[in-house]
Length: 371
Image (cartoon, rainbow, N blue to C red):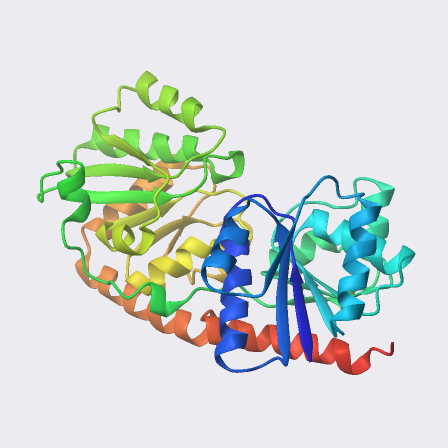
């Protein structure tokens, strides 16, 4: 069986990392006879795949309605005798459907979906999700399945695969003072952090409000760290300044060393209000960092409340503050949560577990597909 993974994504986030994880797992275990990645040139995933020596083909992305590229995609699939095409973002979805319908691309399509977003907002979107060449839609959580049911007529196409992380990339499980040294933080201070792009659904406003409550209570000595970049970064910085929290909240910007800095957190506070799963939560499990996260979207499918982490009410900064304070002051609970979380991760969300689930789904599609 030969696999093609296809994305037109210009960014590097959890979904793009998943493509690399899948390629690595299938390469390491010789799962496929051959495999390829097609992605836009001059993008992070293209650079990463190239650096890792993967079979990656870059293209000049112009539009998701580029018929010339759709024709070339169909030819590539035919020339390489690809058995199944795994699609990883909306624009790739459109291009693959065009290649399949208008240029007779001779392989079934499987869509990987990670966003909690309605797709029944116009006829074109509904059509491409119900296109006959899409044989399966693999979702990271039940929350994603539920929102797709509004658009997808045949619910049998929808299945849950789950999110993924690679334990071998997150081997550090004890702090060594890295952030204390970099940001001149006294070791008597706890570090409460978050790693997330500054976008609306990550709800950094609730995060900052929770910090304000904790600072005003003066029950714990802590510094608060936000890792990431994004369109709302300056707005959040202004909000922090307005609340006179500049001395308490540290913005680190984009970091490439997440496996090194994540174990420095005493608590990971995650306020996202519409998260498909939250891949960074799995990384917290790997690094044995206690979690307080919003009871939103697919997060409850990753966090088992009071067993692997604590869930807080969405958009309620006081509830977040209460749970962070309780967790900071309860070392026995911290130990139980991180140990349970680590075992839960190994059983359900490792690269080997998730790549096997993908393989089973892809194999089922190719077995039932007649060229």
